[in-house]
Image (cartoon, rainbow, N blue to C red):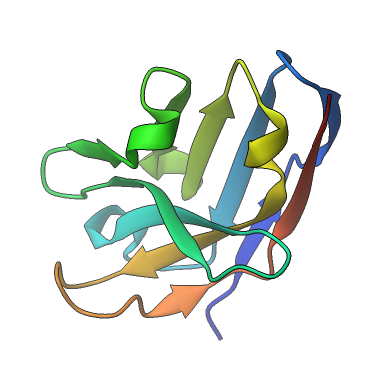
Amino acid sequence: QVQLVESGGGLVQAGGSLRLSCAASLRTFSMYNMGWFRQAPGKEREFVAAIRWSDDSTYYTDSVKGRFTISRDNAKNTVYLQMNSLKPEDTAVYYCGAQRTLGRPYDYWGQGTQVTVSS
């Protein structure tokens, strides 16, 4: 059974930093695109960042460009999201996902980790 387990969330003041981790029990982790999404109360889940397995290309939603960095460590089956200069509007539950084929729905999801940014 595939599991994605996020960690690293918490409460931080505006301007602070957090690093989220997502450990995946995927045997072929290195061949999955990995993404981070978030869902704020009363809102739909939205894309935050992704990293492609083929060439480590990265993609970000405009609101986090220059503040967040996604990376992966295939030896540890883990994807990270370094979040700097956090803002109250970054408050959400953050989910990681694994995607085998670009353009198709994500195949696996984690349970989420809460990030709360106080003003």
